[in-house]
Length: 227
Image (cartoon, rainbow, N blue to C red; front, side, top):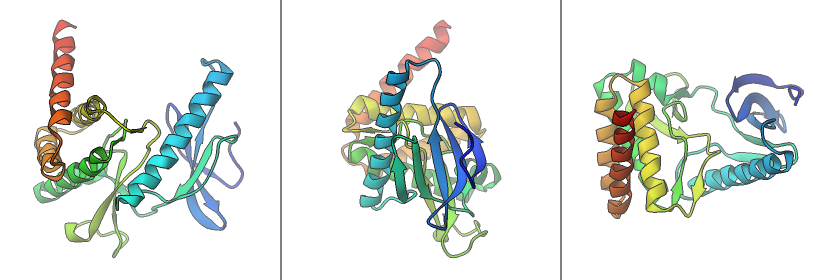
């Protein structure tokens, strides 16, 4: 698909393009899921529609739970697009961690753990949680990230989200996050234990999810050892 009119390409991933656009004169993010040539066209269409519906539903579910996510302005299954809220002064958790001190890293780790716990306790998993898919923003000051009391986090990119998730799904969600941290951050051994502690404190009935996480992690380590 050609670049939409009046849009600026911000990022292209394996599944979608992210544009800076406008919705009724309001700056927004336009997410376009482009066709995958290696799939049968009908299968690709069905899968794309399913993922768009799941993403829109996940964003709206998080909002009802009091979790900050981009507001959905519109979605179009035929055009394979979602128009959603743009946070122009937000930074990724990845950049925040790289440039942060110990106090800031502890804060964001706890916030990610609590956010994920709220999702999982309501049977919703993200599916692709990395520190590039978490934003940090300040409602009071556009460019000040020094005071954690003024900051909030936002989860984005729910294209692989699942609803009515099982304990296994939640365990995999935790494992994907841990692996993403290990591959991205030198302080991952400081971050993930703090995330998991906050997750357990917030999600009182998480025992099955944590047990599944430990099983998935053990299988992953076994595969790594075997090669």
